[in-house]
Image 1: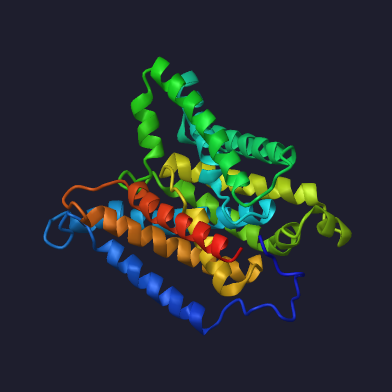
Image 2: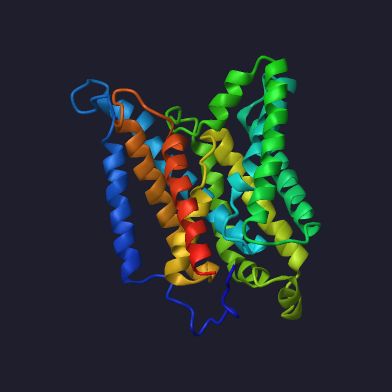
Length: 327
């Protein structure tokens, strides 16, 4: 993974420029389309206004928060691992969050959504730390070995979750959790997603430290950055974002892989100046995939994770071929 040699504030790209404002306008247009897309006639029905406030507005807000959170999580993980093919769904973080959600559901069937979210975050944090610990023992650090290790660990955790679900008759619940969809997002159910907005602010504040940590432990230590502390902070923030999104929406595969790579190819690797673009592009991709999911077999709807998985897999293959071409 190629990084800038240093975090130079004098030569850093502008945080807000004309192109970013144009991007914001385009994404705002997509969100407006999302607000008025659906089977229910919000204009002709008597309770159309009520349905608009109960379903369309919360769903659109959830698209913004979930898309930004998962794209941002992928960017942080790629910096910390120095690998462009790493994100929560290729490191097992999502599977660990699902295992935590399943565990609390089995042990405490009447658990509140707050408790489920807390346990999912805890499991996601532990699982991500297991991934980092495993990487430190792997001598071969090619760009493909790291995500392969993560996918392997995720598959093992997923198998454990499936076994537990089979023995406790909760397999259907497990399937629903991992099928990322905004169908069930309504007023009173999505509000926990606002937590990821706080995570985004924390990432922005610590952006320079994450960027320096992305240069490697030796360089980070040389310039006075506590590398292990930054890894713990980044892991904690990614775990919070992944746990919250998994509980409220479900898995959003490859989003954290697609977005940071596209932004990095266009703008380099400075996290602070890239963060607005990462969040914006994450929102745009999730919104477009959600619109496709809602309209492709209307009046029915497919999970947005299906559309996102197809797009993400294609981009993943493209990135692999691109890296091979560039040596």
